Image (cartoon, rainbow, N blue to C red; front, side, top):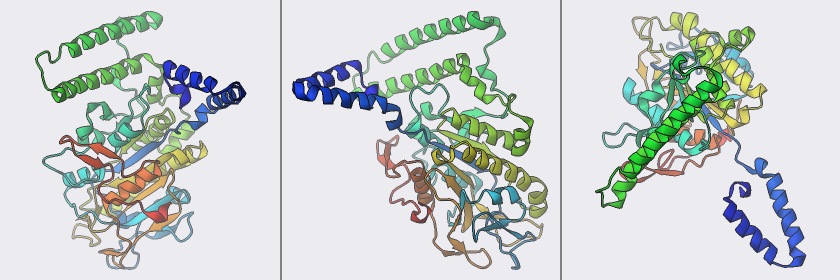
Length: 443
């Protein structure tokens, strides 16, 4: 944007504008004034990703792709959603009402039935590698979407899975800030009482900040006095700069009133109750507040899905009521606040669970065919994409791979899935993977 150019560039541009001729000077100035007036609307709208992470492997055959009346179907009945022809579990009535805004992909194939490998795959879009540590999707969004002047972390993990995967080769600047107890402000953003109160406290923090930057600057300048290779200098200086950036943002978060975004004490009881007023529900509410404040990526964890026994009883009484309230309230809240077009939401875990019910009334690991749910941004709602066979044991139509899922998410955010970043070996890699294509029917 012209209004963001350095002063010297603006003066240089205006000098040439005036130099055309006296007859063009006035129209030229009017053009420049028009640019300034519309600068805010020309800026890229803030885009955000919310990941609802279901650790343990949710049985999607009992939630999004039921098979009633079959040997593998289980006891749950189907419920018609607000989207014509799309049915989901009877124990998800609140989400069903929001399904005109959401779409389910029922034909995902991943072939990673191990918890750790599946978690890495579904967070990074890549098969685990012993050579390259790939960044989580939240870190990629942080890297691609977060303004440099944002005084909040660009990626916030509510629960910790994002922290476990990490920023990979993108570096610690794009690592997630972890919140373990949503609704309670993180411990380290509140100044210690020994620093006083009010303006005294702020000034003492600022003095510490100035001292910190002085030490950091001296450290960078004397970091590699004997280094001769330019690449070594750049690599070490980059690490030092990342360190400064992280601590600088931490200082800003302590002083800035924006740190209060983590506190849910001012939220109404009715809103907290709508979200479920449990850790997951409060995490979903905090996610809405964070993206509203400009955070580019938020992950909210809901664990407890590794249900090898008593699957349906646990779903009915524990997991699904919690999920239903939080996910539905988040969707409704984002839509009502006009944020849905700029926020992509994805619901996923590391794999699904077996169509066959085992001898312990449970389901085991199954990555051959399962479901994820997406919505928001540029993604169409109200659709069921792909189809599994009658018993849910295989894919009948429109198989989707993880690269195509990630490409769909990135396109929904307005990002080109072919955007390249360089890994730790210096190789250019497309953020969604090679030959990844968004699902055309969802746009």
